[in-house]
Length: 305
Ligand code: AHR
Image (cartoon, rainbow, N blue to C red; front, side, top):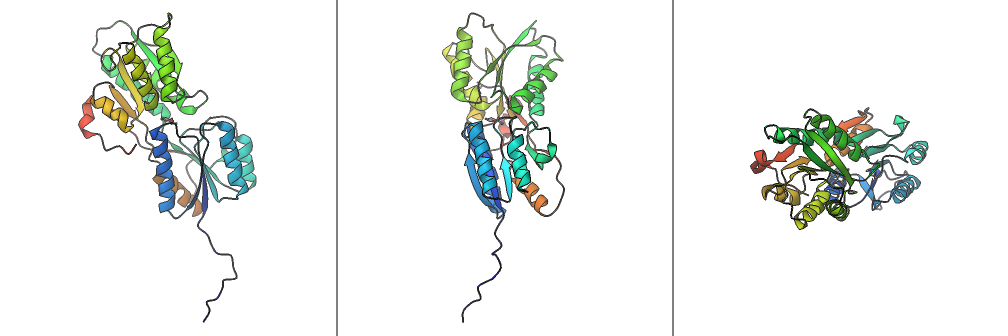
């Protein structure tokens, strides 16, 4: 006999549109992989778009998901501002939105269900804590800090700075003497640090606080080319915890790695499952993170990024 052809629409797995901001670092690639693989494990269909660090492209990617009538949209935003109109369009189409990693700045908090990511301010605090502990018993009158921030207009750039400043202000010898913008990329960071070292206005510094590992890798090259020994002449604090920077920590070129955890996939899928089964979500979900330095170097879990 013939099997009966169902006359109702075939129920499909929910379709999730995932808009990622770029692929600028192995951290970012691990972030993408974590979300995609957990979604697939959770039996969701995934439509993925990479905006290659272009905000216009990312807005367009989200509009495409809306026109496809996906069941939910995940956005890892490049920039903090500029989201209101596209999020209003998603709301009109009854498509829920989850923001991951960086924050968005919107007057209407009902435009997204939840934000899932690191506490960037806590990361800055941890970096500051390492700095104050490191210099606590050193007999130095003033400690000059060179800060290397990521892309302007992104929440980690602001919050990692704020958290760090808050903590180091407990030691009056510490001062951020210059802040350079490295866009979260190795090449840009190499250029700005190298230019700084050659500038007549540059001051000697005791500490480099870099907001991302990729930028740190560029900065380390620039320092070494200019005969400054990282980890020795200058204390190096970095954020992320990529495999290649943990290696620098064990080689003594980096002093402290503040982890930024890219493994958010489980949290994201858990939130989506809860939403689809009718539960209310917390508006902010922080993920767990730690700090690595010479004190726990033998206990660092294997990195997958
Ligand atoms: O938004 C998180 C930051 O973006 C990571 O620290 C950095 O590596 C990435 O580029």
